[in-house]
Image 1 (tube, rainbow, N blue to C red):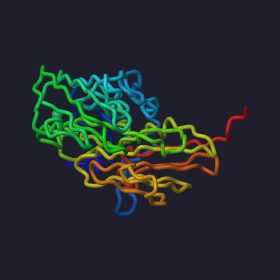
Image 2: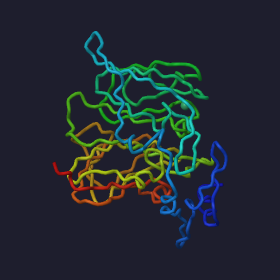
Image 3: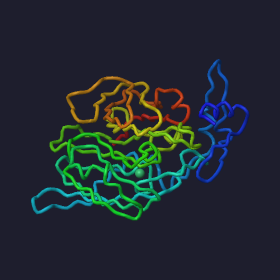
Image 4: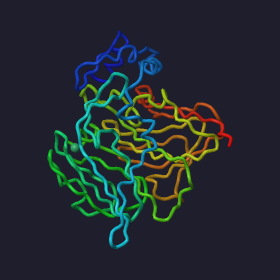
Length: 334
Ligand SMILES: [Cu+2]
């Protein structure tokens, strides 16, 4: 059954979507409606049908979680940041009642957002406690044997990645075992922020969004889309920000199977810094698209209060979960 078939079948009643645990009905959440030549999921129904269990992974908290590692100083004076990354298989809930048999770093998808400063020594102890061979491939400048492409880490084995963080910007990491798209799609990816040595960014409320998708019936297409893994999470739980507050959004595209994803902001424009590396080089826009593996930094400030949507401008992705809301409020009086 293809994704389109799922949507068409939805018009006839409850839809079963196969997961690692068997068939799980999306029920009214996936009911489709005919509108002219188009068939679309009724997003409103999907929104009002319960919520996921956020006790193990809460996308609202993930936005603001930066892992700076265990910090120490090397004899040379260089800052050392040590991280522990463990690959484990885990079922994750990507929409209410819909489980996805994921492969994860540290039990979560996306993996933790690793953050350091340009020139820091980064040391990552990688333990493969999963069922398949994996690696961690960091984007950035480093030695060939630290690239996580050829040094395959079998289940039960460990590997030590070590390099000096460069260049500054928004990078990412992901598994590079083959078949590559399967290993990435299963959930082995995360954001990797390298702050510039000299501060160039203004203070801001910073948050991370990793755009992703989930093929829940193994047909090579995504049935669920999201940013930070849970369909419609930021629609059910709008992100509260203040009017006039500077927002810096680290945006990464980790979607497999679809060549492009995008981010569209309502009622506002943003500065888009490709790869987040050059503050003097940006685009002024309200919509940006990213190919697989692309990333960039968005900066914006809302002039108006109220609910403002953000979503993929591929309408199909938005209707299948990649949609959220900023709830812009008057600044708190002090
Ligand atoms: Cu892998």
